[in-house]
Image (tube, rainbow, N blue to C red):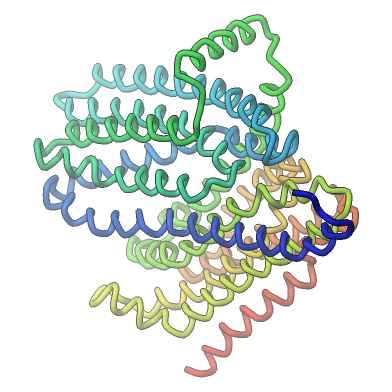
Length: 477
């Protein structure tokens, strides 16, 4: 269609509204992909416990945790695919997107094979030292293979993120996550054993991988296998292509940062377990599980916004990026503040309804404290995306590496002095410090070129509002 002179300028607000609506729609789809599987998990849990018994359900839950942890840790390759594909060609360059995804598949398949070989070898070795635990060992072996299959789906999902096909992506992601509970439950109803549950999981991962291969519109499997063999030859000769090396370089730091962030996120409960009572750990974990759900929602919003932010970052002009970023950061701030107010005002009643006679007032206090740090950290995640888009993921990983021992020390002091409440304050203070350190890195290591991000004074103001709400509730009582 022919555009009259000046119509581009006239249509710019309409185009911005379309893009803003696209990001909003994608964020809602991502959030639904998080919430719906959680509902399925809640419904399936009592059925699994009844079918397996408490002890074997405990083992199954550990195997599921291992599958999720191993199956999503592709050392940043899938995140790198999004950034590299957008950076090299944007949303419309199908050939670049295809080449980037296929290179990511080569790397993920290699990681999956290494994981499967090492995991299967370790489990088979365990047969020598373990007695009649065949059900446990076989189910663990099948779980490792399932995790390896999950790894291969990640580049396919990244390709769909670049295309902004979040609706169909989240349909399959919801199916994939729901099957983590539905598939073993269906298998256990036939034969109540861990091995049966693991077979159900393995079948579900094969179904999910096939589904993602289909909906992501990849080349035929034979062609991918042929290109993978070419990749292996290049790897053997140490002549990897530029796109493979770029994914490795960018993905390595993203992966390390994500792995360290996971360790930091779970360090509080392990430190508390070593320095306080089991009851204190229980109180803390319940509060942590409730408050950290905000990270899932913000993560869904970040995944939806990152491709557009990365594309806007490339533009010579900075006004478009600032508009997108302001809307993104504003949405995060609104969600985080609303969550904090909700937990402060209604958290106690919610906990009493949820826990019943197991409720203790200290749990509510820990929820309020953790909510301060987590809400501020969510807003700071907007600046962390700037590190990734600005190719400073290495700085983010180094920050996590430095934070890990400091976090453990702070948690140890807090737990030693004040138990679970002390650990909560230590964790919240560490998150607050991280928020300002990330902003400092953005200021000093990235050429913003007129782009803003979330400034330090806005972070400080937001933090003060969160603290004021906390103390206002204390005065009210």
